[in-house]
Length: 298
Ligand SMILES: CCCCCCCCCC/C=C\CC(=O)SCCNC(=O)CCNC(=O)[C@H](O)C(C)(C)COP(=O)(O)OP(=O)(O)OC[C@H]1O[C@@H](n2cnc3c(N)ncnc32)[C@H](O)[C@@H]1OP(=O)(O)O
Image (tube, rainbow, N blue to C red; front, side, top):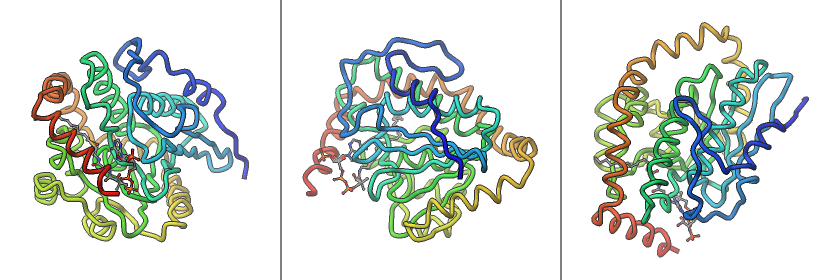
């Protein structure tokens, strides 16, 4: 197998002073006063490899301990996606995790705790952009879900085209448990997979589905033993790439158009809601208690 890492991407990912690079806006400087805590450096957090033979890249999320989506991390993901999108030979990307038993635990909650208004706004815009990139990319996208996949984690997996998950983990939108509400575009992308009622019910309860229930409902496409998830994702990718790229991408665009149109017309209002709502004292209290409960479960 011929593997090479994308030097350019690594280079970009290591230099995270100016963000975001994503479409639909110009770069802005980051207030770096509120860097969220992680056991990994920015350089280690995202590893991209490319297999020339299969024309498939792997985006390995390694922001330990749980791949919490901080501003820096989603910026890295966004830049990497853009680079891969522009790499003509690349036809697909597998998103995998380097964190034990966790695919992604969602947004890094620290981003929402006592945030500066400026950073909060950039954070949400960057997340919106990253989601749009992933949801609409020409690349075939497969999520290799080797562990829990919660809230913002489900944002990533549900934006992909195909999902392979390991058994006995949890996946879904639990935002209400944190006293917050998932944005409409994330809800739509889950609803596209599992239908209205299951989405409404799980959203209102903050219910996380087991891998097995997720398979039954269509929130994931396959459940295989944890040590086979990546291999299965690669095999499924190869099968998917037998479909001509442009026809596949046009079909995806057709199916996702309503969600994208709704997103584009609602994203400004969505941003305003987020930046107004998160700093509220009542929300801050609930978020704080949630973080405390995570720490005290040990
Ligand atoms: C109308 C109003 C509209 C308002 C608009 C609001 C919009 C809201 C945006 C909604 C979108 C997305 C929201 C989110 O994604 S919020 C995040 C939700 N995620 C979770 O609830 C997951 C929490 N984590 C867990 O359940 C567990 O950690 C785990 C993933 C099951 C793993 O368990 P584990 O036992 O293996 O590890 P654990 O010891 O719990 O965790 C290790 C350390 O990591 C910290 N941590 C875990 N998750 C997060 C996180 N999401 N952000 C930051 N930090 C996290 C945890 O506290 C441990 O830290 P420490 O070692 O104790 O210091």
